[in-house]
Image (cartoon, rainbow, N blue to C red):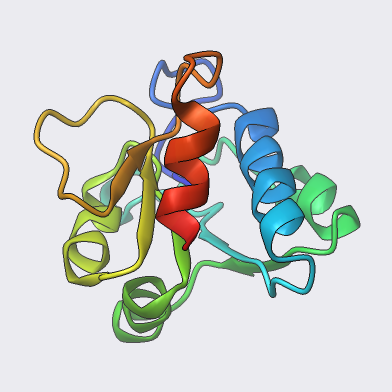
Length: 141
């Protein structure tokens, strides 16, 4: 899940596109045939519907990387079902991601801001740490 719709482009919670693309490159090194999907939104929440900070074209970089992009799903069930069952789930800094993340028994990669991850969760930040590559391979195993 990639949080976008309700955040301004300069919001500190916007995780850069390159972070997600880098994680996808790492996943594809381990699983070259991985079917990668991103769920996000360009629409803002109902109270601020007229304030639009993102466009569908902002996701073209992911489409060019062979990633299927899902934007503005009308309900929660389908995205959460996919996220909860993903072989590898990459989280954004968003409460939306947490419900399926806690249900996901596979590899969950979080962006370092969570205080009490589960045993199958991997901190995707500080990838220069000496244990990162081993932790990543173990998460994907």
